Image 1 (cartoon, rainbow, N blue to C red):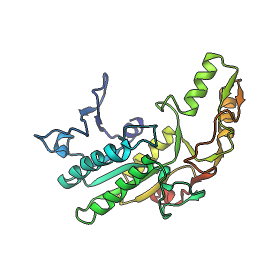
Image 2 (tube, rainbow, N blue to C red; image 1 turned 180 degrees about the vertical axis):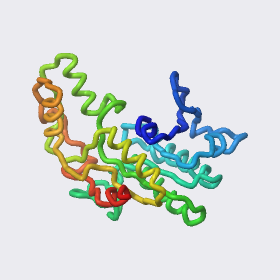
Image 3 (cartoon, rainbow, N blue to C red; image 1 turned 60 degrees about the vertical axis):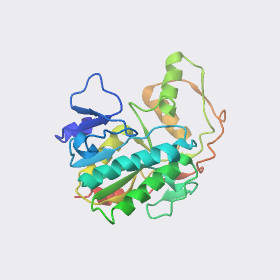
Length: 261
C-alpha cells in the first residue's frame, strides 16, 4: 500500500474479510463463491490493472489443496476478469516452480516443481498464457524468491528470531544455515511488483529477486548485528527442507531490463 500511495495511486483492495480500518475502497470477495448476479470484473470496480497476491493453504506447500482447490478457483476468477475486460494482470508466482534446480535460475529454464504449491502455481501460469491466445491482455508473472519484513508469517525465520529474542531465549534453534537463498526486504518486493505492474508492458515471467545468494546463517547473523541482539544459534537443530536444493538464487537481468525506462 505505501508504494502505491507513493506513486499517487489509489487502489481498490479485494479481500476475503472486511478490514476494520481502510483508507481505500475495499471489496469483500470469496473467490470460491463469487457473486452470481454481477460479473466479477464489474463487482471489483473494473480495474485497469490487477496485482494478484491471493492464495490459500500456505505455508503447507505439500498439500493437495493447492491443486485441487486453489488452482481452479484462482483461474476461474482471473479468467472471468480477463474475458470481461481486464487488460493488465500481474500474478505472484514462486521460485518453487523451478523445483530442485540449483545455481542462478533464469526465467527461460524449464519448470520442474516438486511441491503441490509449485505445481499449482506453474499450472496457473500455463493456463493464463494459453488464455492469451484467445483474449489479448498483458501478463506479468512475478516469480517471487524470499522476502522478510513487516506482515510476514509468524512462522518465517525473522519473526521467529525476533520472538526468541523478545522472550529472552538463550538459543535460537535453526537448520545448519549453509543453504544459499535469495532474499529481499518486503518493502523492496512491493516496489518491484508495483513497478512491473505499472510499466505498461507484457513482461511475461520475471524473477523478483536480489540476484545475490546469501546463506541463511549469514542472513541471521546480519540481523543479529543490525539489531544489537545477543542469542546463540542452535545450528543443525532442524533438517534442511527436502523440497529445496542447497544453493539457488534468482538471475535478475530480465528484471533490470523490465525496470529500465
